[in-house]
Image (cartoon, rainbow, N blue to C red; front, side):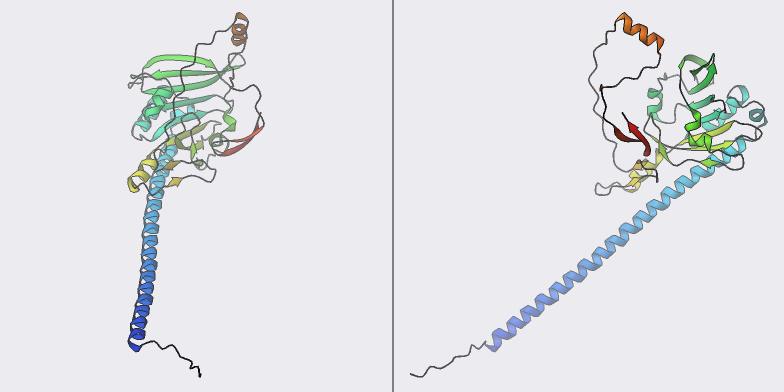
Length: 314
């Protein structure tokens, strides 16, 4: 019996339909790929343009603060009263109050001396949390902090003034503040205004920047600290969507501003009253500054202060 080899043959109509379907599929894939590519590029360009606009707004905001702080501090360093007696009192105090009133972002003005004595005038309305942190009352408008040496000891005096710059109340305690460790003081020059990197105020954890200048024919240094909390507001207004996270930080580290809401810190439960023996009370009387720790033996930890490496803690 002779076996015949049968060759499989696809009908022409079926082949044409299959070819058209395959071509249509390839065309659809190409169109979808091109559409994805162009949409992606458009989205990236739009996002890049939006970020560039935000960057420009941040630069403009910081430049306006730079110009304002630099102009004010250059005018202040030429005041005859300030040069004759670089202290925050009398007419000089009133002038500094006027400067801070027309510049609400100015949180404080410093006058530092080479002997370690410092005066700081604080605007208690600079930020809402400032008043509570410094234990100011509702009627307090200004706080003048004086760090001075007396009988071989350094003291810190806090004087609270009302809106008319009338003293309301004051208190004082011993201090160990070292002004020479602050860059605004050690790097200040007579010829031009020095500016620190943006940083977080240690007590408040709010962003700030300090401008300083050395007074002519004097060892005193004048500085102005500016609040930068408005940066976060600027970022929040420009990027309100939940999908965009923006963080602003200087080269030294530490987030200065963000469009993200601040983390809510859970309050600790109220601690019971600590009863001390007479011997322990006597030790506290002899040592007014007492450091309290929650651990008896800390392992060595590499730590930083506001993004600046500060060595090891034990």
